[in-house]
Length: 513
Ligand code: NDP
Image (cartoon, rainbow, N blue to C red; front, side):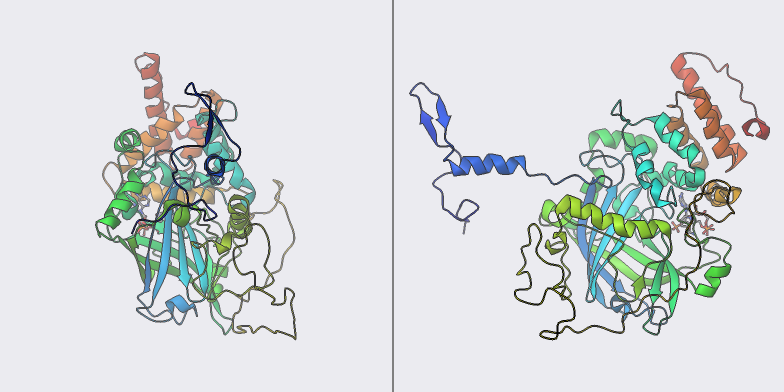
């Protein structure tokens, strides 16, 4: 049966395609303030947008399920992992980071991988990326790296000088730059993409024990990427390529799957480990910390409505469940504040009541009530204060935090302090970037493509001193990489100047000192 049209407060209407007008007899008409349907139609249209996410605005989303595939009871009490075969509903939102909601999704960028697991002990959000590391490791730099990747404050355009000025000034991100400018910076589809926690988290048990973990989500479809040319072509021809590919695959019941693994370090191992496990610019090499399988992800249902299901979704690494905890990674600590703060601004203080964010597990938090747009029963007459003897609440006392012992000084790095502070950049920060450069060397042509992709961006630099600093930065990864980038940039600049390769490339490592 067709639905019967009404106004938003239920009044049936005769028609919704003409306004009430005071006709002047010559074809004109004055509209009336009393035409509630017209006023509501226009007023609601003016307010249809919620603020766009400042990062991760453009996205695809869908639902699916996580299935526990292995016994991990020695590591965690997390209920969703408690039995082999146990299934948990999941909502996935995969985004680009820098560009706006209407932008092309095949452009080179890191891709966000946000996943809400609606577990039977509350929502667990995995707010990951398709790269295992990040550009910065001190959260105070987070807004800066994103601004440098977005639009110039004067020209309102992306700006190579701004981008590279940030990165030579903050070279701890060089490892991540290699990921971004490798083939994986332009994935062929979401289905062919891996994702990584990046951060170190903890698996916890009720006996107070804990382990440090990193999560790896590996595509069963195989990693596939677009060539740089294909990505640019699709940006024009099909700017929603990644959104369309996932939607069409799910509609066609071609459900994509991923295997999920953890790397695990015992606290004692972590203390002695040669890598700072709280540094988000570093991986744990596979040979040292092997992957252990925990589950499988299947995406099998498209959203019924994009705005309700995906745009109104809010994810935060602070949404954790018993058995899963944070670590002392400063970036993670800050994100645990920043993500819910962004949701409160974007969606309002009661965003957790929106159907897409609402836990499927029972929720009872009567000390969190009222506020704008509260559409729950607001806990009726239950006490709105703690420790009521009139209507006491019960607690799950077995829920514990990882019992880490903390000691130290409150410090801010000011440039002359001892090593091991997150802001300081040392030669050690280039070791894993160099390892990736060699990993790319295993695949024919990949190093050359990385060089071309980097040179394409670097050749937009207009300040010669900045260009020199960029070469010096990549020379710390490998002098050959810097030589090759410089040669390609010079060739591009000569071509656009109409000159014929007159620049001399000095093939000495000392050039970059
Ligand atoms: P291995 O030498 O054991 O393996 C290399 C890994 O690099 C692969 O397992 C793969 O990760 C990843 N990789 C392969 N091709 C590419 C590519 N084109 N772009 C980006 N990543 C690729 O790795 P190690 O653990 O010894 O680390 C070496 C380097 O590999 C690291 O410095 C890091 O840059 C990169 N890497 C390491 C990861 C880790 O967690 N150890 C994860 C991802 C990258 P995958 O199987 O996840 O696709």
